[in-house]
Length: 242
Length: 234
Image 1 (cartoon, one colour):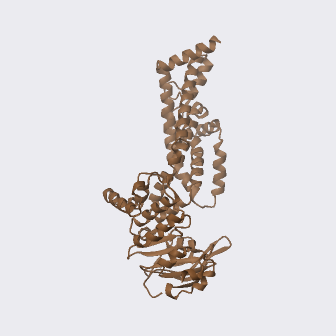
Image 2 (image 1 turned 90 degrees about the vertical axis):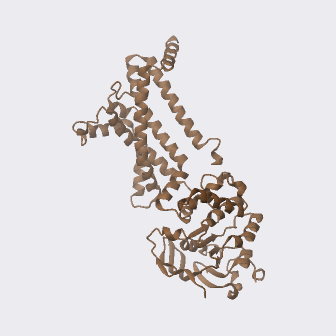
Image 3 (image 1 turned 180 degrees about the vertical axis):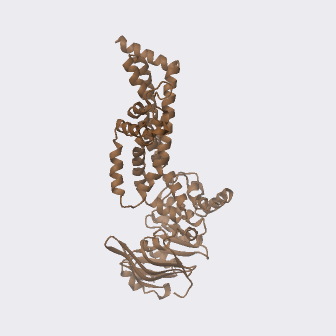
């Protein structure tokens, strides 16, 4: 990859019981780009994302952030606060939508007035301003995901991780996500996205990494990517993507 | 039949007129029970989280011990604590025997396993995504703990209330450690036992009605916290 590498993985091995989940010699995330991770079910996409976003620290190997090795024994709080994650099936905490969107800022001890201003702005961008006082546990799937997107973006993360964010959504919500997502992400943001959605890949990808049985089969810029390889578990027919 | 109706009538009269002896016994009981529940909760909540969330070699063994202690008879705790705080006991010099502090000590030991086991189950059944999301939002270790407590609060309150109900209604520890001293260590249950033996059935019945009402109130609060009409909205 010709661009700056913001995160690099070397010799990553993750084993669950007797099964090798990940076996990656080299993997890099390009700065300020949309980095897609694709692959079939059980190829290790989410496991890789969990390691990249520092949620999973139970693995062997080395992780580098801007060339500096990250010690997996440490909490890495400072670094974790530069990242945000949008999960496939988001967990919303007890309380209303406002509380959930504001939570990452509260954890960073941000001033209450600023929190209130930012939450309202972010809710308006995601068209959920009318839901702010609603209990998070009464939301529909699409509304939950919008809330979780707002929660992830409110900290203006340096790296945004997205784990199959549209898999459980209805068509209307998927369309909203696909048409608004690129506008919500700033130019300074690096995005690492696990996705099955051919429209997202077609529209957003700068780099694509294909995983197969826990290994990197190929990792290339979208223009050089051999879409014939999509046969390895991705739902999109080749002709529709290229 | 008159025996019963007279006793019930007299019991309600004692309650309605706020009989000073009844009030004193109920106050002593509540003070001791609230203190022991508070102390046991402070110990049990972090202990339950450690047991539920951490992997360690003796975890299975500790869980078996914890489950065994759930059905611990109060008299067994009474004998054990008595052996510790009596004059010849390891901590005999603290003079805890026949004091409210002695009862609180015994009751704390009695309900730690109960509150710990109930909270352990609550924490254990919580969605794993809660922790993952907290980490991904940038929560520190302390903030993760606070978020966990906040998410599990209804279950934790339910466990604490169950512990309170257990100590409020127990007699073994109170009788053996407290000695049923009037105005000092006489609780609802020990007084009921004594007054019945003395033939003051109406007085014992009045205390029984109060104990039952408190128990009903505890269960009502627990129900509304865990199953109430707003449950789905939380």
